Length: 111
Image 1 (tube, one colour):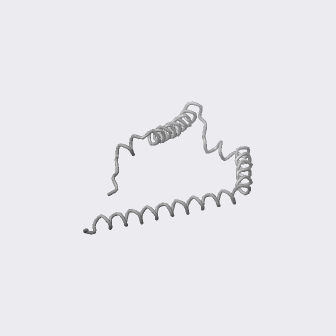
Image 2 (spheres, rainbow, N blue to C red):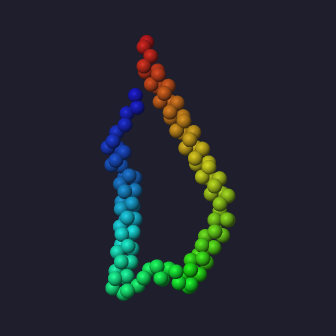
């Protein structure tokens, strides 16, 4: 029978590191939101007006074009690696399911 330990899963170092990283991301997002609210309130800056200005739109379009160009260069190998990863993951899940099924059948058959 397959045994599962919740302590190993919830308290290993990788899980704790991932949770700390996620808390950091949430904290950064909240800080950005608070800063935007402070800018809008104290300095009377309208974010919508700033983002819709011609200069900002031109900069965003330039940045978007750079991202599209970079993606056009790397899309084929990245897509290949992603599909390879998914096929390996699928094969691993299927082999684990088959192994668990055969073990449960073998353990449930009387001798």
